[in-house]
View (cartoon, rainbow, N blue to C red):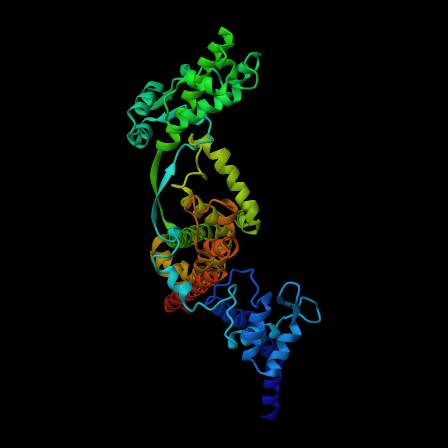
Length: 514
């Protein structure tokens, strides 16, 4: 009995206690620290203790409220700098506030009533912000105005506008009768598209080509630059083109009446072309838009997680059933389906960017895939499913190996068809594998970061594919709101734990044991 108990304690000391210590150090302590940080306004980079404090505040507000030993502790790590009029924190290896010393210094400053603006306790404000009117606009579903033509875009982007787009999302938005008449004179219906009548712009490149011709006129000199800029400005400000007035105000030779007839004609014709092109660009950028619904962070997270969990498990199970046969190419096919799972996410994103940019346009005739917010969420789910499907296929194949063949053969002899054998025998005995696959896919989908970030490194919000983990990353490392990001991470952890806990409990009840 004694030896048995000693053996148990020895086993605990050798194996269990180190695991518990590591678990506490790398799981419990970080979680508790995360809970603490989520109640602060920390920006992720600011020091937890002040770097420097004015001399009078340090002595009269901090030291004056501490006992001698506490004063001695702070004086050890803060030195008085008469030149700057501050007490400055030391950064040497011997006298640096790290580890326990940093937390003690924070406690002493708090006890003295000093508040560090870079690290302040805000209570549950970060959590409340998520459910208040102060939350981020893109956190909830929203309707956004999508501009189809930007001011810097070339006119070649607007040479052809689909009829429906032109009549519903462009022409009705123009309020000026002059602009409306100009557009009607520049565009002509041709089948299912409105085409820009380029006879109004005989020179290619507009301003560049006009400038090239004016540059050759010696009597104009370099003053044509200001002339063309003034013409463009008039167009953008919706002013009527007055060539003579602009010419007089920008070209000295014109005011003196010393321009040659050829230069005069070039200026007048060039002004009309530059003006019309700039006015057209201004009208397009101001009036060619439509509205698009964005799911927002929360709804996209739910959409992505649900879609990915269903797609990856259904497809993986179907492939596993197809490969659970005596095929000559069985091992090769298993490897083919599993290869995407071993690829780097950067490689996967690069492969699919090429597919969506070069292959899909050739097949479908549509060039906008990854850059189309309407299909971007579905494409993201497609890529994530393709990458993870092979991993879950292996789980289901392992589960199929545990289905006794003699039971299947007996059922077949008794007249049970393929569907009946699957629903009555195979599926119930696959529940342990389904439990594992659902647990991993649900938690993995809710935590997905790399595949979305690799596909859309800087446009997740505009494309409507920003999930909660991307949003947490943006808050922490882009917007410098580490406290708010930590609060979201804590809530995400609770959501994942709750959902997966309920899922495991529900599927465990349905497991069949032989």
